Image 1 (cartoon, one colour):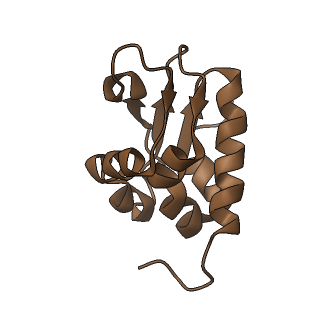
Image 2 (cartoon, rainbow, N blue to C red):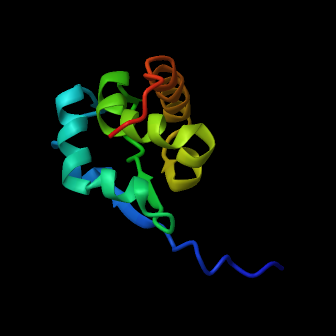
Length: 118
């Protein structure tokens, strides 16, 4: 068994259950994603080479709408690229969420500007 890389921290857990209203079965809206991004300080996490975050999506959630995903993660995908984004931000939830994540990453990369993000 290989030893864990001492330079990579254990992921911080973000349970999205704590950020949804009772009875809501999907996350939507770019402003909501952007607000959560700011609250979680993802810009700082993006540039911290040791930081990782595991997002737990409740089983009742049927969709991470692309607008919400892009508000929350677009800047990270653009800054980090797909591989590093997936290494840094682990998103766990119901199987249907995986398609939303894949689509959100593709859209963020497609919409990316060739100029560096400030």
